[in-house]
Length: 146
Image (cartoon, rainbow, N blue to C red; front, side):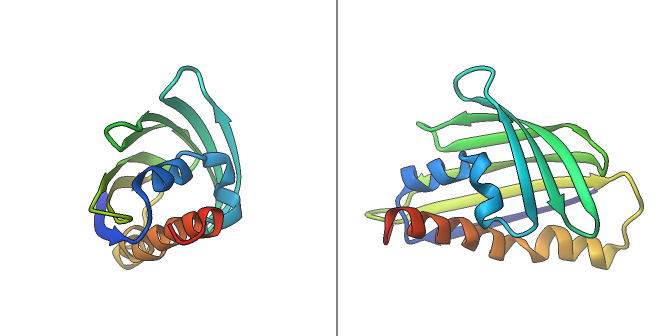
C-alpha cells in the first residue's frame, strides 16, 4: 500500500476552494487524466462519485465522499474499482488569513495488480503538487484572483 500527503498554503479563498473540490462533475475540465465523472448525491454532505480516469490505462472507480463545508473537510473511501483495492483519503481546507487557504491532502492507495515501487511513488506522490495546483488554478479561473 502507498500513502502520500501534501500541505500547502494557497492564495485563494477557503470557501471557493472547497466549492471547486466538491464540484466533482467539473473535474474533467481541469484534472489531468480525468475523462468523465458521474455524481449521485444521496443526502446533503454526501456524494457517491464514479470517476473514469486515463492513467497507465483507463480506470474506473467509485468513491463515497463525506463533505463538511463548515469544518472544511472532505473524506472518501473506495466503494468499487477495476484497478484499486484501496483508495481512501481526505482534504482538510482551512483559512490561513485574508485570501489564503491551508490545504492538506492525504491519500492511501493499493492497486489490484502489482505496481513497481518507482511507478507507484510517481503516481501517488509525484503528481500531488501539480494536482493541488490544478485546483488552485481552477478557483482563479472561476472566481478571478481568489
